[in-house]
Length: 144
Image (tube, rainbow, N blue to C red; front, side):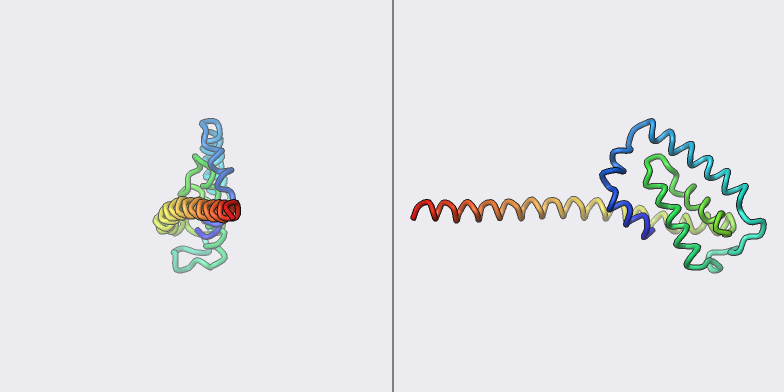
């Protein structure tokens, strides 16, 4: 989740520009290919059968795969499950981990939108105060 939040904040405008039918179509196709590739390339014996068996490295890499879901139309759960399977996590554990990340991801997305709106309104307010202060001083100097 942390990699997705960081990249989401950095590339917010670029991600918004990808919201169109063609890019969503490509995201769906790439997501489907990734799911098939994960099924074919996964290790025969998973290294982590349950969530408790996962390492921090596996969790971080799965979080990096989740960054693919910043691309509009790309399935967040598909990216997470595929990343988990490619990292040697069982399908069941990857699905469970994806479900656990969903709440945090949605919460983070909502908070990010709130923070951006609030920060922009505070920034506008600050510029208004500066502008009024400048005009007040300018008028005062003009009157003297």
